[in-house]
Every structure is written in C-alpha cells, then in structure tokens.
Image (cartoon, rainbow, N blue to C red):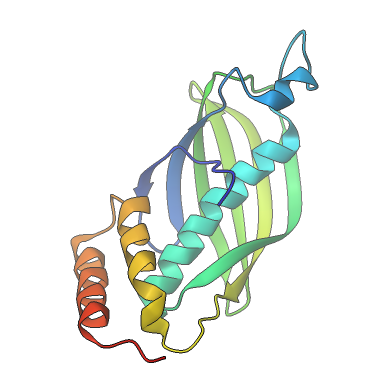
Length: 177
C-alpha cells in the first residue's frame, strides 16, 4: 500500500473491534495547500484513517474465519461528523467497530480522538474483494502470512500458530506451475 494511514494497531478482538494510532507529520506536502498558515487534517484523510483500520480488521477476520486473502476496498462513506479540527502532529486514537459483516460488503463505524476528546465519527462501507492468485496459491501466500504476522503483532497465539502452520505447510509443498 502506497499510503499507510495507521501507524500502530494497539488492540483488536480479531472479530469486530480494533484500535490504532495515527500521527500526520508536520512536513507532509499536502499541508502547503490545506492550509499553509494554519494546517488541518482534511476530512477525506480522516475518512481514509477509519477505512484503513477497518480494512485491516476485515482482512484479519476473513483470514481467521476462512483463511481467504481479500482486499478490503472502500465503497462509500456514510454519516461523517467532523466535530473539532485535527492538526498535523496531534496523536489520533482511532476506534473502529464492524457493524455488519457479510460475504461481500462490510459496514463499519469509527471515531477519532485526540487527548481523549472525540473529534470525528465516520461510517464506511467496504467491499471484500478476493485477491486472485495465478496457478498455485502457495506461490503468493508465504509473503502474505509473514505480512499478517508483521501487521498484527497483537494477534492471539492461536491465530499466530495457525498462520505459522499454514506458512510451514506452504513452504514444504512444491509450487505448481
């Protein structure tokens, strides 16, 4: 992913709730236009923070339930309320909950906090798009499993063992070409 809108995942139940942190640095290029004298975090980036964290939870939940690799794609935003300005350099605590999860579309809601004060609430809908593989899935899966373990350092021991067993099995099987 070119843009990473979550710096750290701090908590997840691996099913319907996830928390993370984000701090937009003061030196990002877009500050020159939004607004040079008094920069603020644009609402569209706040939406992307929620969508990004929701996507990580969607991916983790899908992997846990079916070991299927999906690309969570933002479909639309629902209700968004920007209550207070968020400025570059402020540490944003992000709290996302999956409200409705089905085979194709996942509805999530999130809130952004700075110093414990709610600054925005945002609802998003994301598509669960299966990532296609060419030939044997084992060709692509090892890096994905390793990435999962890196992205989610706080996943349960059970999930970590399942991913590691899958990785070991895939690495021991010859790839079909």
